[in-house]
Length: 59
Image 1: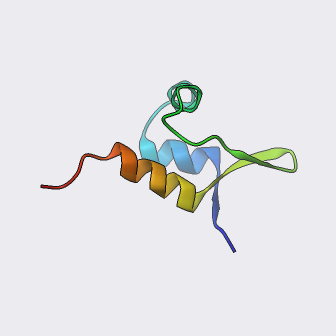
Image 2: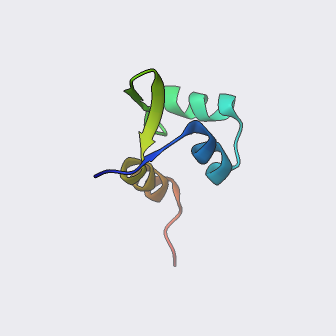
């Protein structure tokens, strides 16, 4: 079963504002949340993949 993250989880992990996060989503730099009932959640695996793309490669 997939793990889902809340908005608070994402903001705490990335240390960004809510407006910055949603700008990244609009720009296609971060995955959009999935609606589950009345709430929005991010799939943890999808978030990890997006973060791996944003991180500079280790040398």
